[in-house]
Image (tube, rainbow, N blue to C red; front, side, top):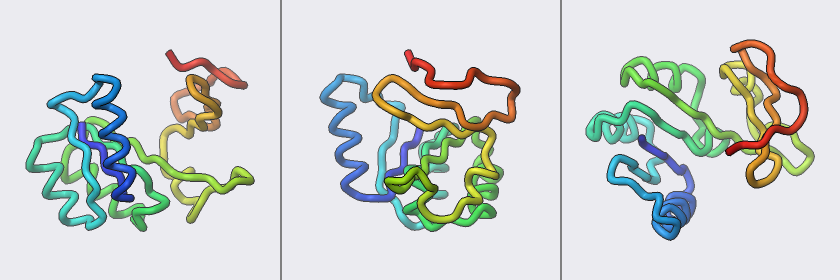
Length: 130
């Protein structure tokens, strides 16, 4: 698993939290890489099959970049994290919400609302995340 934080402080604080809770793994790579070709090389070099991009709002990626990224690296999974404004609107372009298979809004620790799913019906309202 490769976790990319596009803000340097995000990568450091995320890695620190994982170490503090003793959930850091030698199979988890956390990095701050804001150059797309360098990111491709880094993911390829460690053989990661699952990638988190935090966040597409800060990465300035185009949909074609993400599609090529997933295709060329033959990823098993790709999670795109996006930020919202305080009034609940997508920060930056809205094409990400149309491109993805599911949109999940994390409302508070341990709870989320599934706003969109291409995989069939889902429960409306807030759901607990174990």
